[in-house]
Image 1 (tube, one colour):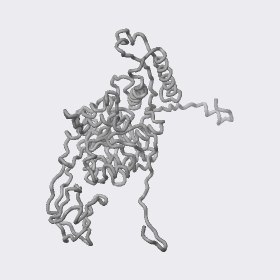
Image 2 (cartoon, helix red, strand yellow):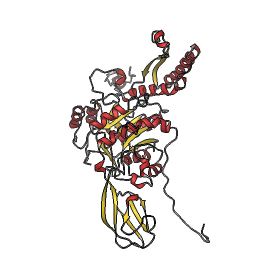
Image 3 (cartoon, one colour):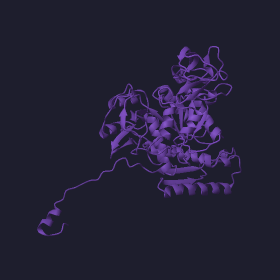
Length: 478
């Protein structure tokens, strides 16, 4: 340390509120991140990255306010800069590959003042070159915010001609997001979902791709990727309707139907929303609100995120144009399985307790009417599998059967006692376990559940009566 004598002052970076610990709901986002800001960007491509705070995100995937180019930054900001409650963790899968998605830029003139110059471009640090100079010997390059700072170690001409590779989002395609698994077992895109449990010992429960899910092929791939992850886990998919072409309530309903965004296990949002000059996809805000709501409900997803506050100040279409509609129009969206936003009691709330599979008046399984019910069934299935994994390949005698029945029954009863379900029962029946199955080591435990219904509407019925007129004559009303 240098010798000091006197009074000194300094400024430390702002410390934002950190998300609470012990959050079980795990959103997974797939998209593009400014990994060119990293020292080793290759390590942040097509791998599940756990993000626990805004600063953690900057260190692991970089950050940019250009959300159109770097879609994952929207999710980072929405979760960890929420004015309602910062919430995490999240998993991000970046498909922006510096070895594939770049464009060469030559002859950029950079002014050098006092040995320092700035390059306002998403440049790959390792690709930056100045004729006759050696990176690391004659100059350094590092990101300072969203621009590259060039610092002379020897003498640099003013201006200097700089060549570099620029990240080019136009080269990222839906095929990169959908991804694949090669014969050698190398995964990319959505297939990276299969690595989350092994890498982080966490079960993915939500899947979103803001900026990409308006493309039907991506939505279809998301639906496939979210079912039976690792042969076990199910995640709820969040997607957006195209609000660039659908700029009215009627056109949004038509677009949803025409493009087949009606899957069970899918929740769709429309339009986009805005706060402080930043525009968010509905799917991102739904994921944030679900995670916040689940955490407040002891990490059990029995409460719908609908009618819960979201951090927005207005609604907009995909081109940024303001769009205004009232609760009745919002309900038109809801009755067609579209979640939207509603202004009530001085705040903006998420509005719509159904999944994309819902259409008012259509016949459907009672289990599938509300988002909370669908997610509770997934939660129970995921929980039972995780809870009893250790029993696989062990002996299953009557004592073990009773232990499982007692343990699971106690857990189900606790959910019922807390109002998280109305009914839960587990049995081990002879009819479900014939001898032919038992000798093969295959056993079935039957579980019956009734999820807690969502109070979609409350009707307070008023009726006029003349009985109060008796008070005019000094009597009491009957």
